[in-house]
Structures are given as C-alpha cells and as structure tokens.
Image (cartoon, rainbow, N blue to C red):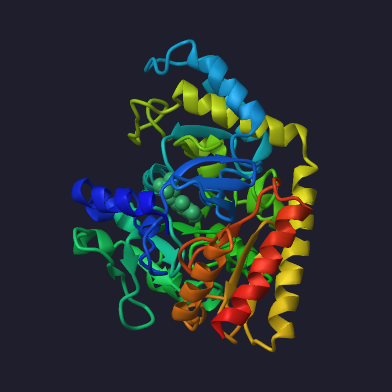
Length: 428
Ligand SMILES: *Cc1c(COP(=O)(O)O)cnc(C)c1O
C-alpha cells in the first residue's frame, strides 16, 4: 500500500471510528490497510498515491456505465447552478418518479429517500401499516441495510424468532423478524404456518449480492409469490443492488416475478446518495401525506441527487442494449475466469448472472448462507491482495458480489484475466 494511503488511514482512525464511514471499506476481511481513492474515470480508480486500478466494485453498483459518465456529469453541473436544495417540490422529482414507474414492473407509485437503508426501513413500515400485522420474514445472508429490524440473525431451532445481531438492537425488535435460509421454500411455509395471520411482509434480495452472488433456484421466487398471494403477505423485493443492473426493470423483469413492493438504491442515484421504495398504488397510498404511515426526509428528492439519478435512468431507458452488452461482458469474463480455475484443477465454485459474479473458494455449490460459509476466506484474502498488487480492485470481502460495468473493454478484460491466472498460481 502507498505511503499517502497509510498516513491517511492512521489519521482517519483518530477522528472516525475504525477510520472509515462504512465497515467493509476497512479491509478487515482481507488484511492490510484500505486505499484512499482520489478520483475515478471509466473503468479505473486512482488512489492518493497515484496507483491505477481496474474497478470491480464500481461504488458497490452505481457506476454501471463507468465512473464520471459524461451525461450524468453534465446534468449534475447544469442543476448545480440553481442551488442545491430547496426543501420544496421540484419538476425533477416528478420526472424521476415517472421514469421509475415506467421501468420497474411492480412500481406504480414511488417515494424517494436518501439511501437503501431508508428505503427498506420505510417499506416494511408501510407493509405493516397496510396489513395491520407486525412480523416480517427475512433470509439469512440477505442484507437490507442497517435498520434495526434487519440486523437480526437466526435463533436456535428451525421455527424460532430472530436474535439481535448487533449490540443496540433490542430483543423487542428482534422478536418481530423471522429468519429462514435462502432458497428453502419449505422453511418459509413452516414459518407462515406457525405465525398465521401475523406476517406483514417477506423481504428478500431476488438475486443475493450480500453473501457473495447467490441465485434464486428454479421456482423459488414464484413459490414465494404464491405464498404471499395465499396469505395476503406483502412481497418485497430489495432491488437496491439488482435494480437497473440485471435488467432495466431489475431482477423482477429478468425472472418475470412481480413483487408488491420494491426497494431501490445504488444505481438509481448514479453515485449520489439516493434510495427509493415503491409498489402497488393501493399500498403506496398508505404513505403520508396520502395516508397514515409516516415517512419523511429533509433532503429527500434532492435536486443534485435527482439530476444524477434521472440522467442515469434516462440513458439506460434510451439504450436498452446496455444489458445485452453487460451480459456479454459478464459471460465472456466469467467464462474465462472459470476456465482458468479448471485448468489449475481447482474445485472452486463460481456464481454468476449478468454483470454480477463471485468466485467462492469452496467445492460446494453455494445456494445459501450455510454453503457460502464453507468458502476459505483466508485464501480469498490472499487472492484479493494478489489481484490488488496487479492493479485489480476487488470487493474487500468474500461475501460480496463483484459488479461489472460497460466501461470494461477487451484491454481491461485481458488485464483482469492475466491478473487472475497469476494470482491463482501465486496463492496455491
Ligand atoms: C447496499 C444495500 C442496501 C443498503 O443500502 P445503503 O444505501 O447502503 O443504505 C440495502 N439492500 C441491499 C440489497 C443492498 O445491497
């Protein structure tokens, strides 16, 4: 690691808990100290020591068109001249809401917020207000931001309430969150049966990015849809990661399963702090001031954020070929990465869909948290460091998906592959 990053990290630790504003950035899972980034353009990140890296996380998703994408930059600059926030309605917010409803199948009405965390917290409040029920079901390994109701892990025993996963989350909150393993419909059926008429919502990542990339098995999303229909439970797809990534209409478009509500973030802000939640008009009409469920935000719908987000979505809407391109980039790169793994006779598992993938250092199929945890995280740490040395910046944790962008051209793909092959050899 460069000298300036090292100096900044030790200074940062004096003033910021752990030196970072979001834990995974601290590189704790991979060893070493984090890089401090100065700027980025297209496929590349540049740190404060002047090193160049191919970016494989793209701000955890938003930079699907590459960094500092021209049309987004232009729109932000234009909007900047009119001052940065009014706390009053703007035309841009209307454009933004309209384009989201056009693109995301389940969304008839939408409310803008400032992060994915706010979106999921608000969505379950609305689902509870709408159904008059308290409990929710979430899945082990799915991440929905840091709201109390989601920082819950499974208790012991198959049918049990959750337990706080962080100090500061109360047992009172935990008792309303039920946990099931991902990709296990029977577990959900049992929970629903044992809590009949009490479950407001089932929330999940329709493709998981937050235990590494994990795909829904055939019939899983459809099965959840049916359970929710039968039991009048609100089905919430948390598409903060997959929205505008797996298709213009997110995973729900790609898999053809429409939830009742959807949460969005990341890409929707083009790199600005933005989130949104939306769904059926009948449900969203419960949100204040149309209805009784309170939810607000001083900076929600902020002009700068809307300018970036709208420019992003508009570009995606007008260039639907982007998704074919992303799939091609993903298929080619991940195909070659897999070949290299096989060629070295390594038994590892690769999960992949479109522009998301994870290489797990395990010989097990990874379909849920339990199987994801069979990965050798120490080996992943070595792989991460080896790749970094060769100028490829991966997500600093095995339990994160990688995100590709359309800025990856043959030159960068060759670079990534070469680094991958050399790194695999080095660490074995
Ligand atoms: C990142 C993420 C969140 C949280 O979004 P923040 O903007 O970090 O609060 C929620 N859900 C999913 C699926 C995410 O990937």
